[in-house]
Length: 153
Image (cartoon, rainbow, N blue to C red; front, side, top):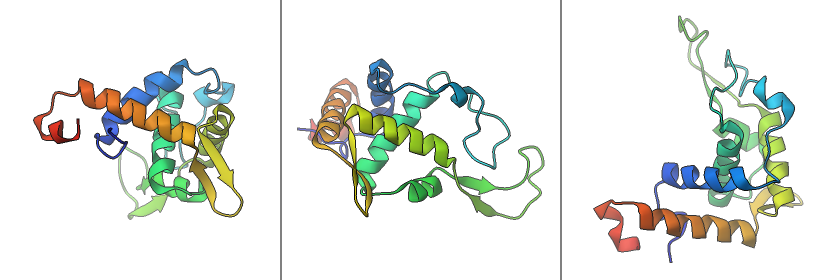
């Protein structure tokens, strides 16, 4: 049986995006179309399925690194802050990602039953979430045509 560690992360997140887009619990709030993903950004994301993609990425990140909190996830989704995207005039500094986007997506994943909150540690994946990740990884592994991954099938 394949696990989430056996498939490439980008392929797993792509398949999870399609699964979570069909879920009624995971839905982009009204303000998501206007908000930036961090203070270092100039514009909001342009992807149509941004919210489902971020939720899928968060589910995988919590499964791999959990238990993990919002502040640590803000650091993971942050980028290098180097001034405007045109000129790159500032020295290299790290900027954190949007906590509201991460927190709201995690709350939606909790309502769907994929993530649970532990008292002092942060959030971790439930059995249902782990099952979703592993089942999706198995489907992705069957669809991939990459010879180096044959040993996991």
